Length: 523
Image (cartoon, rainbow, N blue to C red; front, side):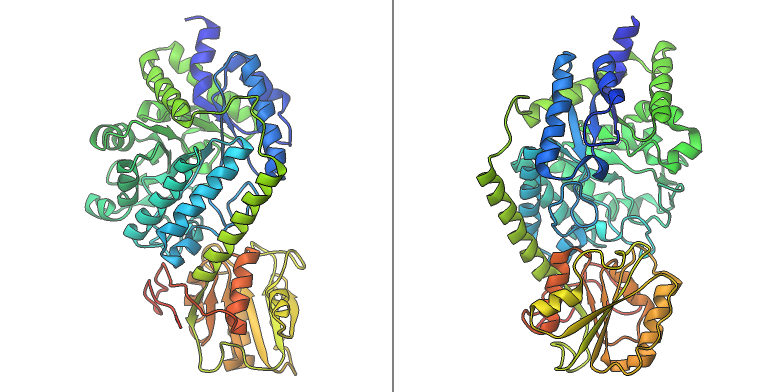
């Protein structure tokens, strides 16, 4: 096999990223020389839908000039905290709190239309992980909830919406990242459940989505001891055995990023790339610095030259990718984006849906008598800023939302490590706004404890990250969960607090020691 032939056999099975708002010279060279399979865009590449459309057109023009197939351009557009196009839709757990498959499907459809307009035909969503572990540091509100049936129902609905818009849904992270207690970006999570439990919980949303025609999956860098000590990404019994042969899935399997410590620190990115292809994966996400990308290409080239990876094995993946491109009906590369009037109508539809989801999602978890709607009198809104939460003064606040509803409210912030000073002399209601992705920090827990001591039944807690935060603060008698800190969710919380809207959301997860899933004060 010639060098050019080998490069173009391997190149289409690799996706990379790059920095900047226009194609880097390196990515242009990879497209020309390797016939690169595609690219993954992140926040560093995107400032607006129109700018993303221009960038994607440039990338596709590079592929056209090289005589290569259209690139698969992918993003993580989950909603909530994980979105690349700035749409402002609430995320998966907010949808879980609505319990509405219709809203999930419409969210998928509008996300798909925006991605299509931007030139991104592949979405690395929905998250089909069942978040059964309150201490999960990386999934949390990215999951629809802890009930496998709910995750399957809403995940499939979101995928249907994407399909209606001509965008490929990618269920992740197969076969389930929801019960992990470690972040696979930093370490290798291990799940020790027996097969019966995995079938009933972790696997169920993926099996159901595959039956409904899901075209693609992304693997989890999680070891399942029922199969192997290797991460699922590198595990033949899981990918080639269960997924391909038993479940008969013949769609595209993307690896999660090979730069993540769960694989990179275990075997190295290059070895992981070869093992992933041998295990049954189709597309390698070589994300990160140029050295890592070269390590992946070099290792796979060598494996092909030495016969470790057969041409027939790689051509299987080529065929799957060809079928995916055909199913997506990728637009002509000279196709113009939507006009301003059409784009404006799409943005209005997204805003309206975001408001509808938020109104149905925000959950009044606990309520002391007479606290919601807020009683007359002054309101102090204190936001625990920094760490994973917004910086001081960044973005609209809950206080601003209350003032827009003609409720007197002052804003204050506490930086990480700053103690609660008790707000001496403060009368009326004190609202403490917290945020965490996993277990709350000891600083945040102490803040709530001290605020409860100084304000007792005048304290309202608004958890804008994971609702599991509330397990660490059982003494607070009035609590709301928003499942995100997007402005639309803060506005919905303000409307509930001001008595302008009734609370409608239900917890999609159980709060340990406090509330079962499905609870919530609904009026």
